[in-house]
Amino acid sequence: MSDYTLRPNAPLAALSTFRVTARAQLLADVRSVDGLADLFAHPDYARLPALVLGEGSNLLLAGDVPGLLVSLSLPGIDVLKDDGNSALIRVAAGERWDDLVRWSVARGLHGFENMALIPGSVGASPIQNIGAYGAEVAEFIRTVEALDRQTLDIVRLPNSACCFGYRDSIFKQQPERWVIVAVEFELDRQRPLRLDYAGVRETLSSMGVDAPRPLHVAEAVSRLRAAKLPNPILIGNAGSFFKNPTVDRSIWEPLTHSFPSMPVFAHASDSAKLSAGWLIEQCGWKGRRDGDAGVSDMHALVLVNHGNASGLQILELARRVAASVKERFGVEIEPEPRIVGATW
Image (cartoon, rainbow, N blue to C red):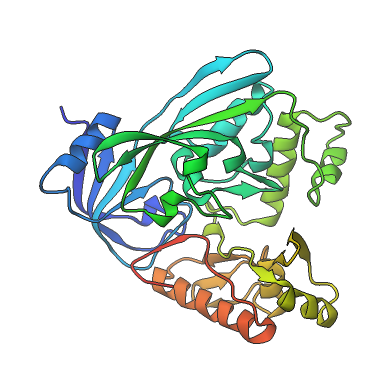
């Protein structure tokens, strides 16, 4: 029995958190690494464009998906080393990210707690270099195992070869080449907890926690995210739609004089990161909608599907939001999710 199955003309609305109507030319359900290699070695599929689908939580389908859409069912968490102070773990790409966070904090391992409740799979986490509340996953990645479609070999890429940046990586830059099958993380039990991000200490206090451990921080972050961000189970969305822009001093300094309340996060001596959510809200977009495409009334950074919006309608709304920010502040904002079927 083959380790993959193919479904032609497969509907995708249930496979992405935006829940927009789209179809895949071929949807491949892959159940093993050998099956993945066999799929891409097959002469009928080897040259097709391919997109790997995690949980569809960082994706906007603005049209149908040509070629292969690959869904990886690769489970497993293996402890490769644990000396009591630190642990090296190997996690298969198909594991849910938040399940891994809960697994790690239950064992007293520090690092993932600030990234609790981020939707998606472990295999998707290096692609976007996911992060939240002052932490990024690249800090904890030692090695990424990926299928190289050029050679059909499984390659072990050390952290230094992954070209990690803000919501960026070599896997995002070369999506047609790499298919992540597993990630090795190094976590320890002594790392200081990060509690300074807005709301974390206050939430811990409201929980009655005076001496927090990773599991407490994960719970506090989960409560903060649930209060600020719409639940994709209840309304279609992909979380934060825009990246926080990094701008030169020549841009942010004059803006702080014109808008004293504008949040500015230090990034480097000559540049800084601005809050895309604040910029969008100042342009009056929070809570607005155009048909079923809208901007969340909970957080201006989140675009939502109120029911029957198409991917193109959501994309067009995103373009209008970005254009208004550019017009008012002179700052360009870019989408965070991967857009399929159209260009930004």
